[in-house]
Every structure is written in structure tokens, then in C-alpha cells.
Figure 1 (tube, one colour):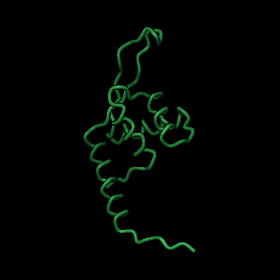
Figure 2: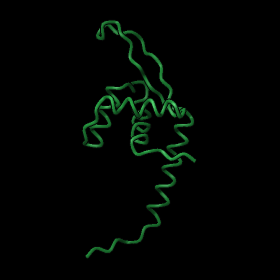
Figure 3: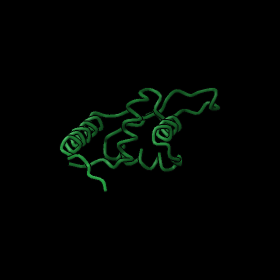
Length: 106
């Protein structure tokens, strides 16, 4: 089993959530909104490249857009492997959280 890093998990969930609108900027905006932390666009693409290498996402080019000077967006979508990795993390977290005792603070 290959565990996902927290960053990989966040980006996979974001890509899944954004569906047909998952590209660098929208992924970054959503992750920053949810995590309330700054992410450079380079950090986003580093994780996206890692996810693509692992087979958890696929990258494809969208249609050209006038607003972008005819340039196309690099879009991402989650693969079955990526979905399965997320399910595994969800199950592990669920078990761990359910087995925790009540905390005892001083």
C-alpha cells in the first residue's frame, strides 16, 4: 500500500470536487480557501506531477479560450486508482478516529 501525503490527499479531493473545472489556478484557489494557507502555484504543480506519475490523476488539454489569448488550460481529473487511494485513506482515518480514547488534559 502506498499512503498519500496530506498534500496529495487535499489535491485529489479538490480535483474530484472541481470536476470539469480542475486546473492549476482553480485547484490552488480551492486548496487555499479550505486550508487557509498560502500555496504557490509551483507547489500545486509539484504535487500534481507526483499524482500523475502515480496514476492517481490524468492530465488533458481543454479547449482554447479567447480570454487566454487562444491558450488551452491543463485540466486534471481523478482516476479510479486515485479514487481508491482516497477511499483507503478515508477508511484508515475512520478507524483511527473511532478507536481514540477521550483525551485527558491537565
